[in-house]
Amino acid sequence: MKNLLSIRMRASQKVKTRNVRSTEIHISGAEGLYKKSEIHKIVKNYIERALHHPKGMPDTVVVTIEDIRQNPLTISALPVATINNNSPTEAENSIIRTLQSLGISKKAIQKAFALIKKGGMRGAALITAKNGNRLEPDRERGIRVSRLGMNKPALKVLSAKLSRHGINTDTVKEAIILASKVTSCKDVIAELCVSDDPDYTTGYVASKIFGYVRIPDIKPKGSKNGGRAFFVREGADTEYIIDYLERRPVIVGKVALCKGIMSLDEILNRSYQ
Ligand code: WAQ
Ligand code: MG
View 1 (cartoon, rainbow, N blue to C red):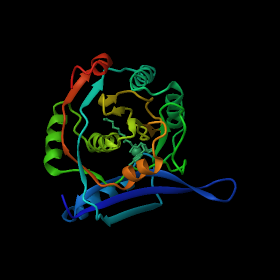
View 2 (cartoon, protein in one colour):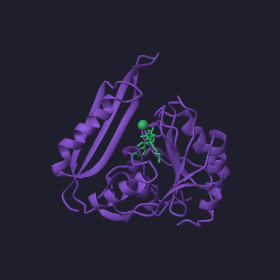
View 3 (spheres, rainbow, N blue to C red):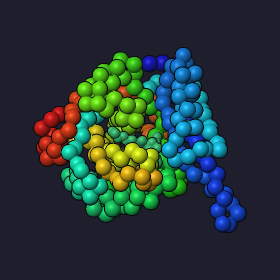
View 4 (cartoon, protein in one colour):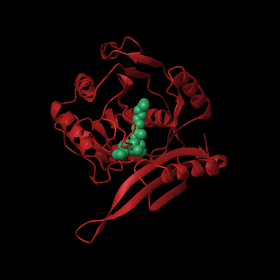
């Protein structure tokens, strides 16, 4: 797919702090790669999202439209499944089991939990899998995955497959596209995601090995805290990872299996893929 544009939206709200300097609260963001003919539709959609977010009304909305010069890389989507989870405590145990099976240390996992529970980041934290070190240069902002999309035929197939399980929403599709790009980076082992939307309590753990594993009740309803953590190989080249995630154009062109609810054991045995 040539002649693509990167369209991004960022909505924020300034708040006064005690020491005069005002800070910005991140309200919402969105990004994707689109054809020129789609600009109006997408910008309208992004602005609607910015203005109707459960986190509140922004006072600044920035939309960036940028021509991309590099030919996009085409990748496959991760397979999708949902675990039969019932509470945030169970969710936490399932996340720990999954991440530990991928060789990620308890220390790194605890770091991610603490960050996500605190919330407030616009992007994702980069955490090393063994020592749990933070690698992103700006810890308030984090790494923002950008220049990603899915082509029309793949989007059609994905929508049909997700519909069978009643989960064909923009939120789910955008998250699958993002997780597929993130885990396609050779140095990323896994991603943990919790929405910052107070009403959206399903999160996920994504990895090349186990796919996109949806986790219901990952947080209590009403909590505005959320975030993303990317676990990377110890000693990996940070600049390469950041460049790949933020700037390398990637299009998902193929869809994998989309299953319904499964037990974590079935997923960890990889009997479904
Ligand atoms: N790059 C990096 N981090 C991001 C990005 C991005 N492009 N977009 C959002 N984040 C981070 C940021 O810290 C947000 O606060 C946090 O993730 C949550 O973002 O299958 O809606 O947009 O049902 O609230 C998961 C869907 C939805 C699960 C996740 O995330 C499912 C969601 P949100
Ligand atoms: Mg959100």
